[in-house]
Length: 231
Length: 161
Image (cartoon, rainbow over all chains, first blue to last red):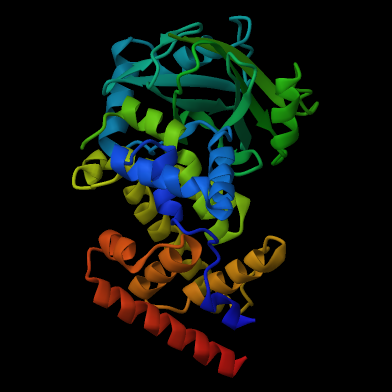
């Protein structure tokens, strides 16, 4: 079996690196022209190039933001303090679907990092392309949390967590989730669905349902919804 | 070149597929490949100046992806050894190429880092010695030596199999 590696698994005259540089228009005009001439007479390279181009059409999930550094956390707390409201209470009011919160329910908050300045987001907040957003939760008990989004084009993503199931959090207020997201260039209203469940529910079925007008949230989960607008 | 966060997001959209494709081939696991995709760009967000000295953005992405994936492969093997269980074999794509990729993954965890990187560039990406030398920042002669070492490791593995 091993001698099969004596050759290459790549099966074209030009390397994948060069074809990727061609697809992404990184080659000089001279390099690109040489490749174009070669492609006219080489079926293997044409096939390889077609495969790379097909792959470049794949829809990627949102780019997650780096977990905030200790300094950034301080800035977030400072932002919350600056509005003069106890962080937990303000977060809860902010994210209730109908602006009302019942005691002991799950709540979600969003912070926006715009050009290095962090602010607390309000319902319907207008954010800029390329801003980073990060969520914090208030959980009435230990449980499992997930944050899903439906973008303006009707595509659903799981913002948190990175794995395929809701992730455990401890009871508490204003608990920052360890990952954020860098907003892409799709403008319009983005809907957010926060889930709080007693078990680690699978998220892919919920994500698919969200794209079809759902999700049908498991009966023992709490859900909170809100939105922001990307311009 | 140094990019701001918005430019890195655009780069993610335009070039992320390169990272994902190579990570899938190297790791043979969709969740691991998705993690590699995020981590490569997260590293860039943390240190955008790392692109400053790169002659090619695509080349930089190749280097970063390879580095992340090889570390993951090595860590998985180490973890499996510590737990005294057999490493979970990554699923191979169908056909000869899939078999060769599975063999490549098996070999990579056993090679020194530089030789493993050269093996990836040569076998997975079909790079010439000159291209590999450009990414590794070494001479073509050194690349020849590294790939010869890879072949020797292959031969030893074949004998022990």
